[in-house]
Image (cartoon, rainbow, N blue to C red; front, side, top):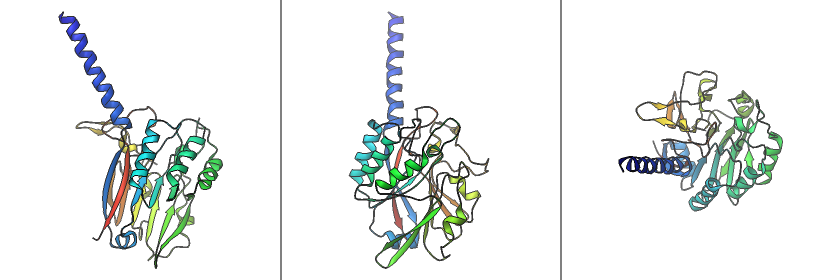
Length: 275
């Protein structure tokens, strides 16, 4: 009798842990992040601005349906996507179709991540991915800048190719910009801060780390996927480095293994306020 009760208790605990891990991995959090910046506050005013990252899409599954549903519910004016559209599968159609749903009647600006390029055993047709996203209305910036104009004001969005694989070219992307212009930098990995001149950039948006993906209580992040063995370790949330503000989005999908713990997938809504 005691052995049966023990087995039953262990089974209940295992089921509860399984449900908890599924919830941690798949239930997307909507996080509101305040950014104090006078210029961005004036520019965006009442516009709703959202960031998503690290989608790692292999199919139109429950998490992807949830993402599209939440974006529709938030109904943002602008969406920034900081790379890793595709997962382990070379099939690009699910990522392109889902981004088409997200970009419908919205302005979407995006950069590529390391998963969006052919690397090691990853076979990705990057050019087809870019063209497919553009056909769906996504502005894909590959070491380019684009001018966003609202009324009489304007802002430059700088988009770097993946810096994890050393495909970024900051100088090419910013060649025609003036020091006084307002700028938002989109880049896949936050380690870009140890590589480029950040003067004059109002905000840097990045992802790549998955917020650590798995965090342990009292220990923190196990692995943050750093670039170039940089000494800076920006994992999740808002950081201040020199005069720059760096936001690291936890992303939507997973990599290496399909599990998150204490680092739930995230959609970020930005609220811009005066300093």
